[in-house]
Length: 347
Ligand code: TYM
Image 1 (spheres, rainbow, N blue to C red):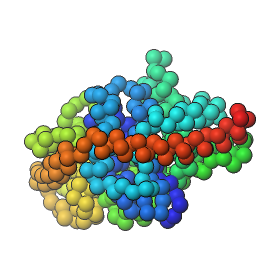
Image 2: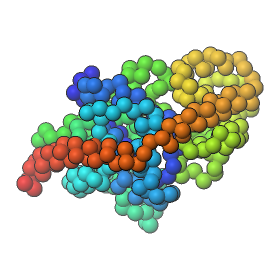
Image 3: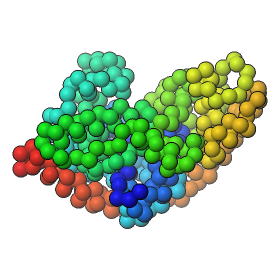
Image 4: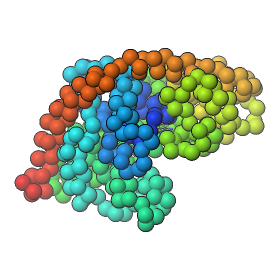
């Protein structure tokens, strides 16, 4: 693969969960290392998406930490890897406005995330929550990104981006490159990573207490989520108390055994073992406690090493990376914005 752009962003509303990390940050890091020789890699902090809801901690601190996490996860930097803050590239907001005038109320109100976050359109919901996928479309279309590695909760937004871009091109002339369809995104991840356990798109790490749901930053129960800054004893306590089932056999079955399947998935991702191998190792076993102990040891060992690497990276290093990234992003985004402004006759 050559000449493509791979792009993604992770909000910084709070400390990151293991779900964000395994579902988005780690796969993006691996993709970047694999493709950055001949492709552009854009990793950005959607700080404007972050302020649509309350922030736990301080935005600036969370943001610096997220970039340290990429570096600690092994992200290799070179001239094709760009890391930037969304709000430092004003073209994102400007394109968002223009796309607002192309997107429809109907398609935007159908977004599941909007329905969930607004409790089905509660009148006190801020407009940012409604408009969030349109800003996301701007984030993607400004750079002509083909691949947008995200967890499955974001798939609907990628399809919306395609629809808006297609409508724009039809009405105003070929302007935008469409991101690949979500089925193609999944295929790209499979081919790229070559192992079931490392699929980025489509991964959904589950809430430990309620494995029907995704592990979420906003979950209230502490035991529902593992945070990247958790200490080993805490991780162990959370994993040992994870909800499972009463079937008494260890198997990968997301429908009937989501809790157990989630633990197998986490084990595979954290140890870098193909999921199939983890499943085979545990097939026929009946003691859930043994599996939990193993997963707890794997996750706490991983986090301990990871946290040590994070502590060794300075804030100065991070700000230098951002400066370089923002210079590049502004150049590319401004050029595209001008093309769009001309297409709609603002220029
Ligand atoms: P955000 O910040 O909610 O989530 C960041 C990424 O983490 C994934 N994710 C998960 N993956 C697996 N298991 C989980 N439990 C889990 N929880 C979250 C999400 O799917 C996502 O990939 N709107 C985006 C940020 C964004 C963006 C963009 C992404 C803004 N503009 C443009 C890509 C392209 C968001 O709020 O993700």
